[in-house]
Image 1 (cartoon, rainbow, N blue to C red):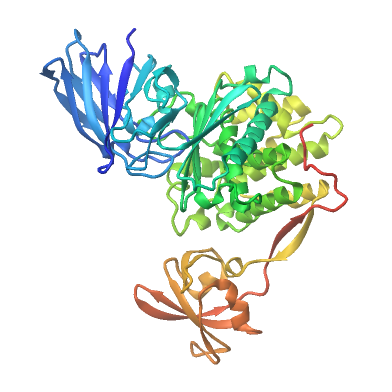
Image 2 (tube, helix red, strand yellow; image 1 turned 120 degrees about the vertical axis):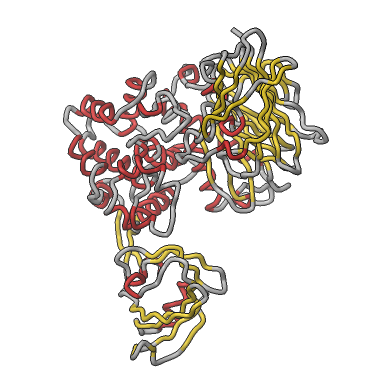
Amino acid sequence: MHATTYSIEAADLHAHLFRVTLTIREPALQQTVSLPVWIPGSYLVREFSKNLQKLQARQGRRTAPIEQMDKCTWLITCRMDEPLVLSYEVYAFDNSVRTAWLDTQRGFFNGTSLCLRVHGQEHQLQHLQLHPVKGQPSWQAATGLTPVNTDKRGFGLYTATDYDHLVDSPVELGAFWSGSFKACGIPHRFVVAGALPSFDGDRLLADTQKICETHIRFWHGQGKQAASKAPHKDYVFMLNAVHDGYGGLEHRNSTALICNRSDLPRQTSPHTGEGYTTLLGLISHEYFHTWNVKQLRPDAFARYDYTQENYTQLLWFFEGFTSYYDDLLLRRSGLIDDATYIQLLGKTIAQVQQTPGRQVQTVAQASFDAWVKYYRQDENTPNATVSYYTKGALVALCLDLTLRQEFTAEGHTLDSVMHGLWKRCKAGPMRELDLLDELQALTGRSWQPEIKAWVHSTTDLPLRDLLSAQGIEVSADTSPMAQRLGLRVIETGASVQIKAVLRGSAAEAAGLAAGDEWLGLDVGPVKGGKALGYSWRLSKLDDLPALLGRERQLVALVSRDKRLLRLPLTVPALASQWKLSVPADRKAGLWPAV
């Protein structure tokens, strides 16, 4: 059977336009085509068809009539005796991992943004023809698709087994840096766009190799046959280094990443900072998804419906457990030490504990509502919802530590559960019941009470007791002023911009609101709405203790809709947050593989 072929050209770099020519060798009499409204891994209807223009259809010299059926679907009336050729343009100016981008420096696209789905032929072979970019002799192409006939720069013909495979394989274009390595014998390529000349590619490759080998051995063991059991035979990392950005999106045998340019390792400095650790955690997270969500997947994703939301209550598992293992496997790979790992864990705990929404919404509900809440955040988000990434990671932590505490002699850990789920569900969809069955098969007892309390209720997790049982010291530490007041802010250097006011906080009681610009304050006892003391300019919240002295009462001067308001505020007594620490006599390696 003939393959469907997509021919992609960078038509106009200045206008940010890709040109797509789609050839359907054997069209139906009434051929329907559509463009996805979302991209798997990013749970928001993004309406990619808004960027499609100049759609035309021809058969030979004949123009085929097109009727638009809805926002993203078209019907073409055809003859069946000759191929149908569609041509159109796609505007590409979203510099994220989710859609498409094209300018004079770089090109990038996901198939969900460029490739119309040919209804009735989704399961057939798909071809992608990448054309060299005119006027850009130094540009290369990188993708996880299978090359059929390509030149040394990567342009030419690629193949995909079906439409899902095609649109799950992003393409990077440009004069990017490129390096390669093998992890457990599997070829890996890393391409980086936008890096500074001092970028240390060798360091990034060596550290990423350690991550990949740790992941492969986590899933498939230490033996020589580990690579043959992996779900991918090659892999491509595509990293876009920008002035300010962060994120990633997993794919079948590749990932698209974005990071701050300053977070990349540098040849001029052997030391790396917190930003590079964050980048390694992102690499670890997206690579873990190669198994957990791309192979193990919720039943709602057994076959993607590209026309609408695909609901599941299991993102706390697929994103949350991945978020637990991303840093844990960094620790096992030796790229961070115990102190750094426990610091990262403490940060995750603080993020959940400082979110009032954890007492409003369960993490299962948060998973289901991702389409309308997590990906559409506003000033009320921290008060109404909880992140399935962070709380899901803490659910994984609780399961792991409970298993280690109760079944020390047997050596049961969450690793054992993940390996069991891989064997049980890798060939089909996974349900919450599969997790419960695997836990019971491993331990001989029901885990429904824990899952009900930790996943399907708003009860706080038993973190303190579980951490203490592992020898982790949990003590009190002074909270930052933003947490003490119940604010989330942006500090511009000239004033404090309020992003969110947390429920039940002192800031809410004072009448502060999202969007306010906090300009200054009057300090001293309040009488008649005025403070009997000094007035100060405010540029950052952590200056408040010095400005207040022993006082706890102030009047906040804020600008709201160009009006100046004076709002009396009582600063709460010192608040505390958890501080995690590892005793000096604690053996190295927190909850290692067993």
